[in-house]
Image (tube, rainbow, N blue to C red; front, side):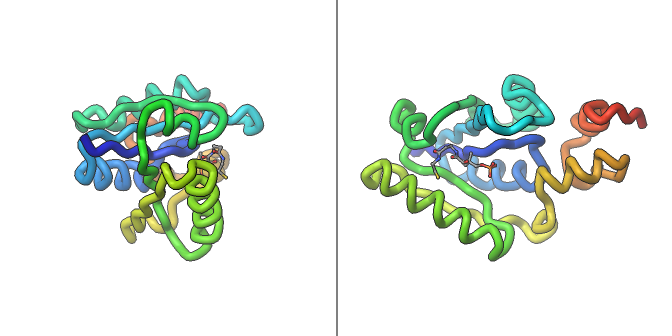
Length: 162
Ligand code: PNS
């Protein structure tokens, strides 16, 4: 069985992430989306909320599993016996950071964990979770950025009713 994982913060998940998930799910028999439990960051949604949200956003995909992890990605990958990590690349500005993570993971895992990059579809090239948060914070329109079912709960985090 060809397995891959798609790690990230997903705070919140965007339509760009969902596009990558759909494309990766076609390429592999099983795709595990793993939400990073990063104690250092103050998130918009808790890890459990994000897992629940991503499950709902991917409920149409049979071969997608949603999980969370803390610590090093290579340790999670080893435990789950997954050898491929998927990451989306939006622009050249992502490249340096992504290259560093990919090469570090390959080195730390002794070659056991490789990274496969998918270039983001052009309509989502501008999208990021941080941009979504900044737009929502000021009551801007996020309807082209996140799944429809999520819009109200994002505004609610900022005390905005629409
Ligand atoms: O969505 P993000 O925040 O860009 O995702 C970053 C992520 C989760 C892929 C990365 O921070 C990660 O894998 N963190 C786990 C810690 C780790 O393994 N670090 C070593 C690679 S530098």
